[in-house]
Image 1 (cartoon, rainbow, N blue to C red):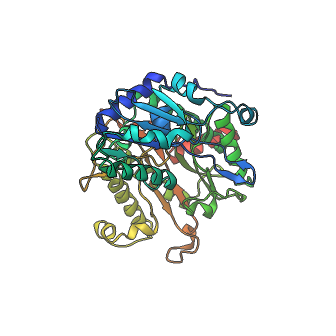
Image 2: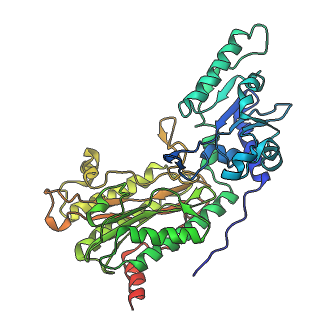
Image 3: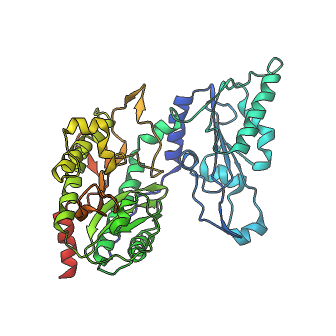
Amino acid sequence: MSHFQAPPELTAEDFAARRRALAERVGEEGVVILPANREQQRNRDVHFPFRQDSDFLWLTGFPEPDAIAVFAPGRSEGELALFVRDRDPEREIWEGRRFGTDGACAHFGADEAHCLDDFEERLPKLLAGRRNVHMQLGDRPELDAEVTACVQRMREMSRRGPPAPEAFLGLDTSLHELRLHKSEAELAHMRYAARVSALAHAAAMRAAVPGVFEWQLAAEIHAVFGRHDMEPGYGSIVAGGANACVLHYVSNRDRIDDGQLVLIDAGGEYRGYTADITRTFPVSGSFSAEQASVHDIVYAAQQEAIAKVRAGEPVAAMHEAATRVLVQGMVDLGWLSGEIDGLIEQGAQRRFFPHGTGHWLGLDVHDVGRYRVDGESRAFAPGMVTTVEPGLYVQPDDDGVDARWRGIGVRIEDNVLVTEDEPEVLTDDLPGSRSAIEALMAAVRE
């Protein structure tokens, strides 16, 4: 079994560097308040596996639920305060050890740490003299209410004490812009996630035979993730036949019959950083003429889009390039008729291509970061990672096209890093072209 060397863990200095960068954006007039995720109940007394909030994870690395981080740049008493669950020996016997306040300082760089019950009492001191509160209002209503009530009390008393905050600001132009540009340490994690995810997809292709069930192929993928200290970064899509025309199909229960395509959209997550790969392949090992025609068009569109993932190019150019190739293909196959520009202007392509060509990727599968700045498509810059994932889908009940096309769904997705020069396809270990996919599957069947 292939096994790849995992990258080094992020260090305390990595997180300290992030906080220094955030301090430059927020300034000493600002304070950032971030809540950790909470455990989510699955059923009765069973919880879903805990996964930390991505913003909180990026800033602190602290892995426990329910915590709150307050980051106040330039504060003389210390910039980072963590409010965490207190140590509880009885609960720890059942649920595992907690870091507590001492561990939050010793292991995660907090300048001070307190139990959660102290948050309300200590918050006014942390906000004193700050003009702007940076937090995502609406994510945690009870925290919103606590912070806004504190600010209101401070405003009422501001004539006798320190000035109170004047504004609440979101995280889009501060923390999220920093998350959009990946460091070398982050890219090492993403390359590892991409390489293992490619291995997992190849394992599913090798296991695919007529009559296999979707869940069996999902199991092959998840086994590879598990053997590399990873977990699914999102709900894996394993869609046979017409199920591929459901963009977020996650049932994964059907049998895949001879002659059908399989669309797999799955990515593994390593230490929070996820890959996101889609491949479409024939369960029998060979594409039919119709399937081959559609796959070739989608692959050509993807290659044109990847070529646009360059520093200085507008992000929208990627989608525009893919759309032109796809629309030309729709006309060539007889699905649409008319001039390419006119069809695109009318939005006719959305009947068969209803989604965008890509999205940011990182700690979230649909990662943070704006796509437009000052009303215009922003330019790609080194360190950004995007997916590139055009597709074509003919719904099984679409009687506006010949029956031989109905129920065909094809998407091809890779993860692409913007560099100073050529785009770096992080997921290029996995074949994407029709001929390469058929060759991989044929090698297994020999």
